[in-house]
Image (cartoon, rainbow, N blue to C red; front, side):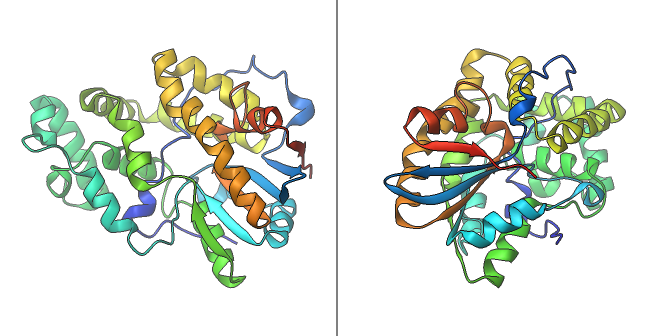
Length: 293
């Protein structure tokens, strides 16, 4: 089953799997290569945690039988955000508005403005104008989506469709405000520079996406976490984008799984490493085993 991204809210849930260079040296955890993990414990119902790639080309989309089976066995679905919340678009608009007095055109040089405006005109025919009062995150999503080709696929949108078909409730680990706030700690100028770099180096960006997809398809979550760590600007940035959020999710995962057997879907970059969701669940006393296939 494939599901295309078809709402502004969904475009903005591209918050974790960034565009990071592929490093062929970090291949040391292959014995546990999987993006799907079973979680068991005395005080919880058997549940599953899956690492997703939030947006990818249609031709690269594959929903394996092991994922379908885990989804079917679970009684509720929990994503990073409650993506079927009817108030989500309103929440995104409210939280993505730039502070009063700031606009995209004031944050860019005239040359960079032209580069970004021309790129957006190719994408939406309107340029920057409709987004001038919004945070750069929305522009990152649009430019990234364009690199993926026409009608990118989304695991999250597929899970929403499957949940509706199976009459299963969808919940979220974070609110829109919490997730957008993660990026408020990175200067708008820095975010815009990254967008300009992505536009000016399209071939490089496209290659990095393909490399990331290859790594994801090999289900090497520890290598993925290693790449993300290596390419973040600082230890503090990693703590904000990954580590702190992972730690905050563990008690929520435990609480939700204590109520119902749950299928959790989060960005695959959250799973690996010593501060990843898998290691933290084990540290919390849960039995966490890789699901192969």
